[in-house]
Length: 67
Image (tube, rainbow, N blue to C red; front, side, top):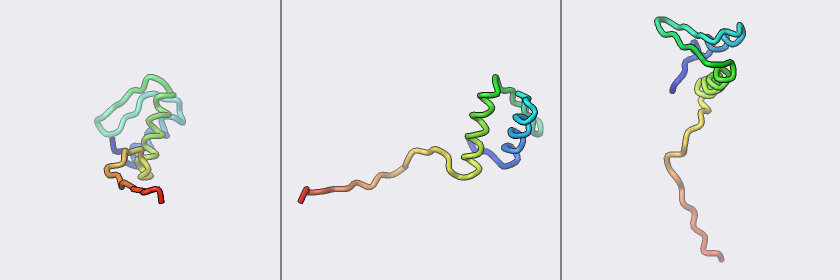
């Protein structure tokens, strides 16, 4: 999932107040715990920074004849 800076700001604001519900526009999300909200914030920070955990899409084989 891709996050925007505005969504990340809304998540951080909710965390600062201890709220478990985040609203943005006509969308509302309720998290089960602050720990879950913290995990989502970490994912959002990685997505906004462009360092999300993605699997490599291509591998470069390396061959060695042992010489």
